[in-house]
Image (cartoon, rainbow, N blue to C red; front, side, top):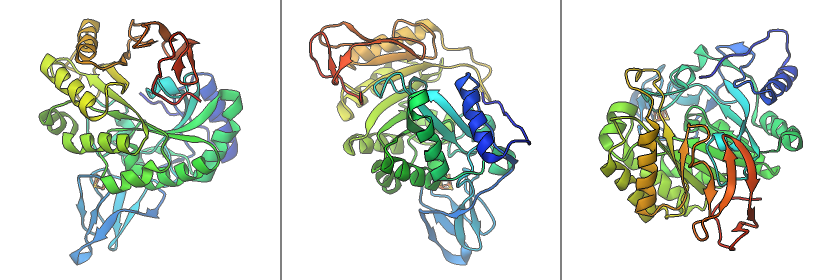
Length: 378
Ligand code: SF4
């Protein structure tokens, strides 16, 4: 859950500085200077239609939007027949996180990522942890007025002190702030900062391919392997997400997958086997997969947290199908948070929560037997 931090006395530079200082002390969210601030930039992917309507071509929903109205994600608006993003340069969260929190376990372990999000989402997951910002309009959140270059400057200034080598587009669905993400990612790459994307994967192929030029890593939520779950629980659909996963793999972006295991809704043996086999067949058995614990949230408060026994069963099933790097998430100090060498079986990365206790991967290989370990290690 994200909590606002706010002071009217700070100017922008001081505010961002103080945000980072607070973040370094473990404060979880940073909020900006103006309540209801709305940025505006013409959208990159849309087409004009009759009567001043537009069709958004960013995500598979393909919203048809009359004049004066917004798309489903609440952050794109038709103004007199032109379509605009309303969140360009207006994040509602800016925060330094361990890269392990994204979660990315095979990407520069032990470093941090400057993580940004705006209001809005193209899904409406009934268990969303960040629903207060994801299901909000930008005028309902407290936003920072900033720009891609300020975000990149901030990341650069924190690079050595906080081992921050990366900007993460995360928390809500980054695809809905596509233009802001794309411009930031392009600039970051030019200036030696990496880019990672934690997404629901519900993005059309053309914008995704454009984004891939600048992406170094991605964690995609594969929320279920059943269309009904996507329709009933998330307000989306499965097939486009599978296409996104295949595209990211083909484009050479480092890829990890997360599945939030919701008791009774997506935790059946058959579904876990189907999901694991699909990953093996389409992305490869070396793809790191995180099975995370569900906690009752937002509109799914009638369920219990996922029993740890269920998560153990799910992890064992996925490993039994042949996945080589399977992790259990949202359960502190569990037995499946370390990285093991699939060849010699030794522990390569020893983790305690988000902390790295030891790392025996050298030059992308197991330092005991020399087996290559997939990931971005330097
Ligand atoms: S990005 Fe938003 S406006 Fe565009 S199609 Fe998706 S939900 Fe609709």
